[in-house]
Length: 441
Image (cartoon, rainbow, N blue to C red; front, side, top):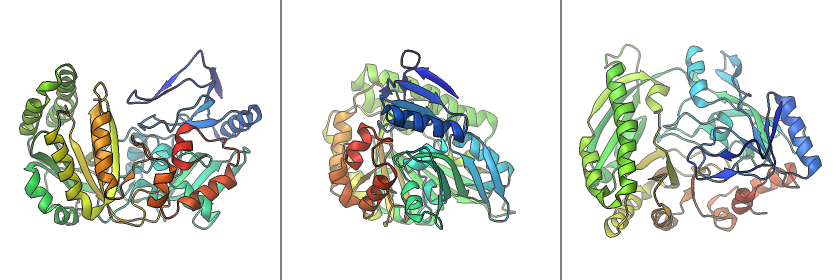
């Protein structure tokens, strides 16, 4: 294990909006290292926060105590072909896990559109994809290994330490350090992707039907315009005659030149000349073109995102999505706000994970973004006010201002989660200011 002091290393998240100056940074290489770090911190009265890829926009990983890196806890440790369950070390990045599962003939049933996160971080914050008959990544978790506040190791599942398991599937890093995850996978599958621009208002009138008609449906609305880009991804039956993967040149033009290179320049121009954003948004919206292709699931789900941004995302009851988007559009139309990034809308089925944002209700997700060099506070505040009218639940890893008092009525099992936390970490070893705000002291 490697330790570094405050003078040697400061931490900053991917978006650059959160930073920390921990007393120490520990790079754990195995389970014993994690236990040693936890016991050592407890002996010195320091808090511990585990960190993965730093892809959360909140201060979830920020600490002035010990920052515990899990990068070296990486890889698939076991595969059971009969049950399709795999065990994966917590620091494994999703972009490493997906090809490894593919090689074993397996896949996760649903993924988000970014794959840079560490597995434990993605689970802890409730990372999800889209699909009205599907759930987020945490619902695929069938077992967890945690290092607790006293340095001991606990294995939990639906059959063993059930209350810990139910809480830890979306645990915010508040219960212990997750070191290994068991996942229920499905046979590897391909997706037929159809992407095309469409006008916003007619689409919103039939958005519920579109969401139900496809395995995975999402839309991106470009503020300052009435234009969207829609994505319809459906599983491919064996023997189906469909277009193949994108050619290398088309993938480079679309995903590297346009979505990253040119879009970065558009955003830099927006930061320098905000008044030009509405005109640029019109051009960006018109520049969207249709495409159709078929590829293995994770290559369709995930895209490279090189343009840095900050994000707020709320889960609202599925039936409310039209009203939320229209209210947001009305606010944008009435205010002089420069918004070069699109608004993303996705869907998910209700689940039973205690702190999942789709717990107990069919859900629509609305996400707003802003370029990392531009002001976002007024826009995000207006968005929060809109979703508050619909019992919106904030994504745990994305920017929001809610505290425990406002979060408690949104989650039927909130107090059950807190009871597990008090039992496992009575002194708040795994706490920080963010957790104190969202969970209470």
